Length: 71
Image (cartoon, rainbow, N blue to C red; front, side):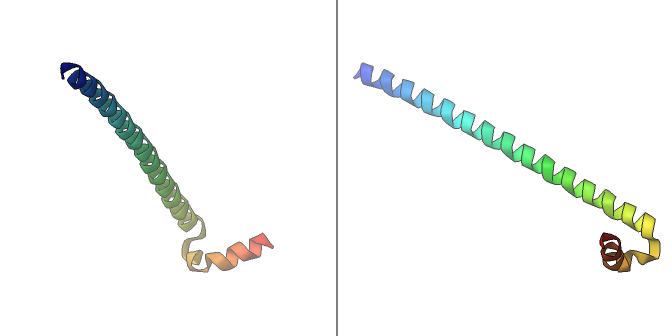
């Protein structure tokens, strides 16, 4: 009986370690994704501000301007 208890405790410890590592990896991936999205939003905001600075009142017509430059 004691042998079975020790074996169960070893298995439980291994499972706990595996769950802990899995959770840490998930948090790492989640943190990286959050940082990437945050940086992307900041970059888009800077781009929008720069467009407004360059084109001023013509911001409403930006698609027309883009299409004329693209041709």
